[in-house]
Length: 218
Image (tube, rainbow, N blue to C red; front, side, top):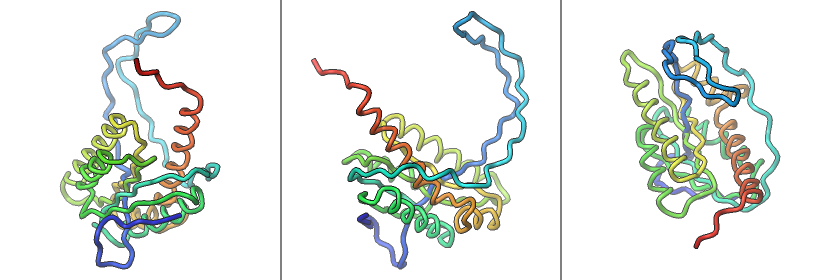
């Protein structure tokens, strides 16, 4: 696996980030009807969302991807102790799962700069997948939630628009303890998880390319 650094960094280890925003659902009110094959049914006015505990283990490793691919990792430098660990774990895992891949690494100042940088990458020669890595720690105001929400929305919009998978591991956490568990620890490591997600979706896209014919230009 070849690793290319696409941004200057005075530190010995420079890497990237993805976000795990804290999403809450405030008991939404549904007013539309849902059409299903058997007819039309009225949806309940309200849905009670139960709290579901977060997974405490990483997903299993997907099968290896043998093709030569280019993967771009865009990671923030902010909260460097944790984001560097995310990058290190992600790249190490990519080397196991996609050993022939070329990884282009771009470091940016913070999480907010990740979407515009990825947009710049995708406007050029598109990689097989992009991994976004970062860490946002909540403070006394709503600033962290606003940044995480805007980053997530922008990444999803770009993935759909460019039809390129973007793995979002820009994490939103409450404190350094949660950050350590997800960036440095082994059981919840989101860096390794991002690499496994990338390998899985690349495999899916390759299978779709083989299975579903593209329309012929006329």
